[in-house]
Amino acid sequence: MSMPSNVGALHDSLLNSLGTGIVSGELAADQVLTLDRLSVEHEVSRSVAREVIRVLESMGMVESRRRVGITVLPSRNWNVFDPRLIRWRLQAGDRAALLASLSELRRGFEPAAAALAARRANPDQCRVLAAAVSDMVVHGRSGDLDAYLLADKVFHRTLLAASGNEMFRALNDVVAEILAGRTQHGLMPHTPNPAAIELHDEVARAIRLRDEDAAERAMRAIIDEAATAVTNGDGLDA
Image 1 (cartoon, rainbow, N blue to C red):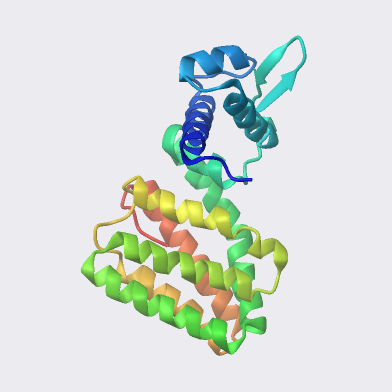
Image 2: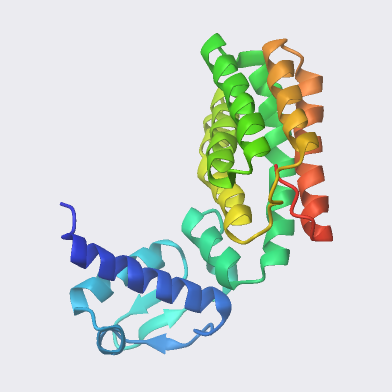
């Protein structure tokens, strides 16, 4: 059963507030919260507060125990693959360290996914990849970063699906949050770099030609170029 819109808005507001509070350190590890305090401070019902705590518990960010209360857990307990947690950490955490960690993660699976896609992609997936690159070219020239981001997400989602590996496909939301976070936090150039778009085209072409080595190599170049640009403050896209 879905929540009424006003209750859903209160739920999301409290969840975002507590999530960003935990990742920023405002709510420190081992700090104890109570439903009553959360209800009063955030002007929500106990039932809304309880549901939010259940979500945070599922993410490994808090632990609720009888006669103790709700304890904020240290970062080693967090489900770092949860897209919501990635979003909060990009908003309020150590953004540079997180982006470096995420780049290392992407190096570990996206080049391999590209190689598998060169072996397994079907014709429709090849067409979607090519169309996404064409859209990136158009929106890159016009400087429409929102439309560019959508095309970029389609490209990476299709690539992961085309790998035929369910584990890689399940990481789509992680990649999508990385791409969105760079746009939302000003880490993208006003006009996307043509070199980055050309690398996406190389990946799509290699997949279409069944060239696994070329697909893997071009995908790794995309990630390395983006990581270097973010480190240098240039905001290059991937």
